[in-house]
Image 1 (cartoon, rainbow, N blue to C red):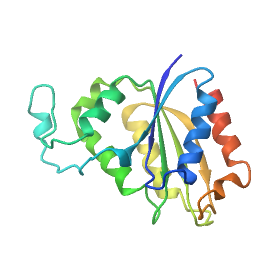
Image 2 (cartoon, one colour; image 1 turned 30 degrees about the vertical axis):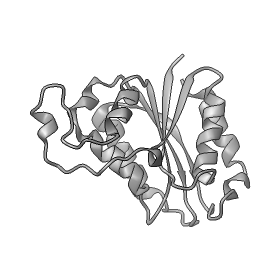
Image 3 (cartoon, rainbow, N blue to C red; image 1 turned 60 degrees about the horizontal axis):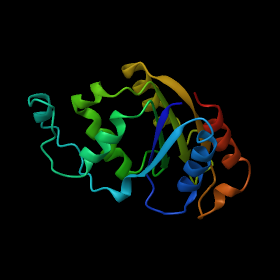
Image 4 (cartoon, rainbow, N blue to C red; image 1 turned 120 degrees about the vertical axis):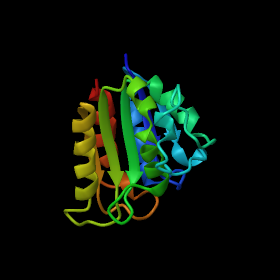
Length: 179
């Protein structure tokens, strides 16, 4: 049994990204412990690039915000799942702030071995997710993480659109089979 943390980057509670993340979690809970973290419930500022975390023992961030709570949760995770709406071909700003704060060397204490991604976009362009997937592959390579899989949903603009088609089933199945 692995511990899975799902970072959900949507401001819209009960929206498409939330529904996709919950479907994944429902599938994964059969064999794993899963925690959904809505990053919008945490006050996390963007990385300042000051690198003070590299010079202090224990690597505390200069900023005194809720990122420490997220670091604590990630220290216990075996698998990390990132779920985000796609705005202008990128992750949500709230989620990006959390990811950028992983610039901290505290990340080297994490035991995360696998990364997966759930993305929802309103557009239907074939290249909608290309920029994010390029970053995803770079992160996998840099941290030597196993690719846990992706669920990519296009054309989901209005709240609940992700219920159309088989996207929720794909997310559930990914959760059920992730190991």
